[in-house]
Image 1 (cartoon, rainbow, N blue to C red):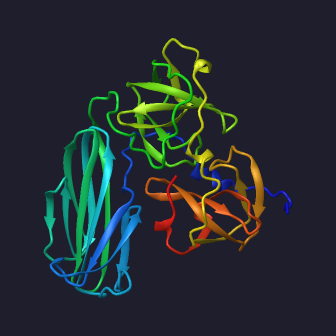
Image 2: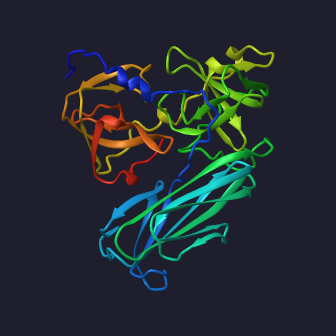
Length: 347
């Protein structure tokens, strides 16, 4: 049933930023972590339980237990994952209370396992393009417990043809037609967000910098008013707004058109996570205010959350299914979540 049209709150626009005016490094938290839990401080005991599919290490356990069956004090956790990296130098940043160790490709790069209060440590590592294993060992002795782990590309290495699958969130869509092997460069801004889809609210993959030429592969006008282009940045591929791209001697309309991962996930299953709206909200076809309006959700309406986008480590849009079976996208900051967001896939 269609609801009466209402004006969308102007504040929503603040969450749909494409251009990065200052040159900044964006945090990555990693996806698909596995956590193994222990009822001892040093992980030197039998494991209690484990969890898979964790998207990011960012927890404040307070004085409670991290999961059922684990002590509220004197426990430890081993987080492990394999992540794709662009060649370059990265800064790994961890905030924790009480102790932490970090391993990259099974080599220990940080050891702060002695118990202490809330601290933040940083370590830099230069990595080759491709997959690398990450391991974070965290321990709590008593009282407050929290852990946040993130990393930033601070100096990019040489760009070239990727030798591994593009390290984007979600599944890259094959290019339809023959890619045009020409360069495209960023103009008018110092850095331009590259996203998982041709939408302002899509998850950020990386940043394309001014002064560098990138391979452009395809185009898409799903957002309506702006053409987005599928470009290659190191080992990563993603979508960049055409408003801030200059093409090297070609007609960009000659590029093949291409869909994105967002065109493949409308049939995603319910996973037991519920959203409750805290405002009258517009339900959009895709995560952008520039896409078509499907419906409007009432204040306090319950929906199933089946997907999400992430920017700067924060949820920006939720893909939801209504009680009437409509699937669309709503902005995340105005939604109360019931259930574990870690089980909701990032698009």
